[in-house]
Length: 175
Ligand code: HEC
Ligand code: HEC
Image: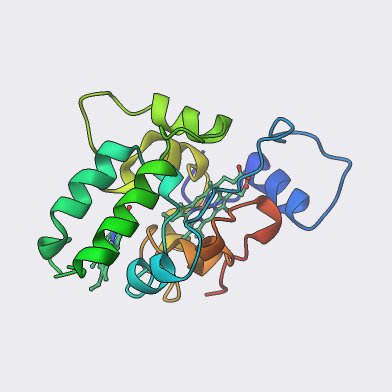
């Protein structure tokens, strides 16, 4: 791939995104839609979606979330501490909906399998899965004002706060 152009893989995705059915390249296997389960209720989106996208728990393994929740007072340079009841409720949801959690779907299990057992990554954007899924998004797109960082999922995945990352719900903001 190059840094400037839109490649065929990318084009195919975009065409699929607007609903064409003729192209079958890059289609996910049945039952493998990019939909991640989200915690019930509003607590998670309100508390963990106030500064950035409310990231789907299924994007990281439980050990990553446990570490992150234990270090909330110094969360990427911010104090994101929670009251104890909220902390416990969110931790429980993150653990049960994590990539290696009891309800993990095929996609989540693949995310988890790609992370070494002795690592507890804190950045979704540094996981092999994220990089693979976005390897054809050119650098200049990430730098657009309305995006800023690849971690700003919701800038492009308009229903990210509902755990929905499917091709049909991607809208890349114009420059
Ligand atoms: C006070 C603001 C704030 C709150 C509240 C907050 N975060 Fe963050 N979070 C940040 C900042 C700042 C970053 C780093 C952003 C960057 O550098 O791209 C970050 C990054 C992250 C990342 C890494 C994203 C990546 O780059 O891959 C995850 C995962 C995350 N937060 C989860 C959570 C969870 C879970 C909660 C709720 C318990 C939470 N955050 C609450 C400010 C916050
Ligand atoms: C610049 C816009 C942009 C941002 C920001 C972005 N993505 Fe994506 N994402 C894309 C594009 C384009 C694709 C490829 C479309 C396709 O083939 O599904 C994609 C694909 C995906 C897929 C696979 C979808 C599928 O159908 O298999 C997932 C999951 C995903 N992104 C998650 C994330 C997460 C999580 C974040 C934030 C941490 C994020 N994305 C940030 C543009 C973006």
